[in-house]
Length: 272
Ligand code: 0X9
Ligand code: ZN
Image (cartoon, rainbow, N blue to C red; front, side):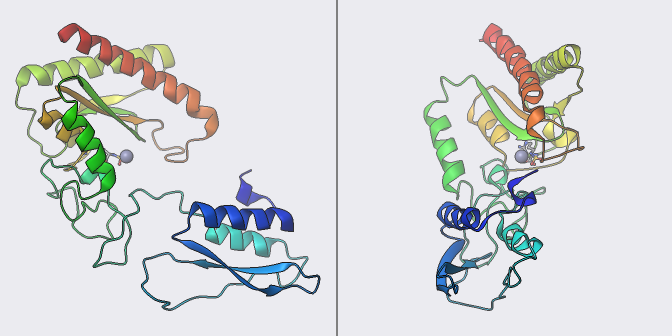
């Protein structure tokens, strides 16, 4: 069971309060509001779910007024716990209280067209302009300055078990037909190896046609930059656990991805 599916001693909870505030100083603040009859500190955690300039409206929740009701403090910890399903980065925009840009919509490849959103609250928010985010800018800068040596660009995501290649930012095929054919051949060979060695199925194809239109992705951007071979890997699984893939599945998921990387890399070496 996870940390939050167990009951914790007071000492543990003090430690947890400390760790949580240190890990997320912008979101969680600790306020000492007094002490118990036995002189133990009473802390309030001030949680900001959105950007706020001053103190705005708030909810008070207390847990554990009755000592034997252990589920009550467990709920307070559960409540504060971060959103495991968060997708975007953590940037604040000036004109919205919603947090985060989808970094895989923030690259300069048909930026913010169909398949992305200009609404800051969207899960696929493209940001204010291409490379507006420090994370995408850093990756783009590095690749720009190393584009002559980087022969193969791989970006690893989950889930759905797919090997995708350009384009995702348009339904048009990659302009060079020969390149398109080599993408298909490489992905097919990689998927066949995964099937043979790990008995697992991976789909493959151009992103836009295989899953959906998604402009502003790093793979398309890198390909347009001149890195000839560019793939998005969507690792395990196909939806049973989804983003919550259990640790016991890590080694198989990684080994099958590794065989795909090796297969594709070997082909790239042959061609260059
Ligand atoms: O939508 C995405 O960014 C990727 N799928 S995910 O479920 N991991 O979010 C697919 C990316 C495919 N490539 C591009 N959109 N460029
Ligand atoms: Zn992803």
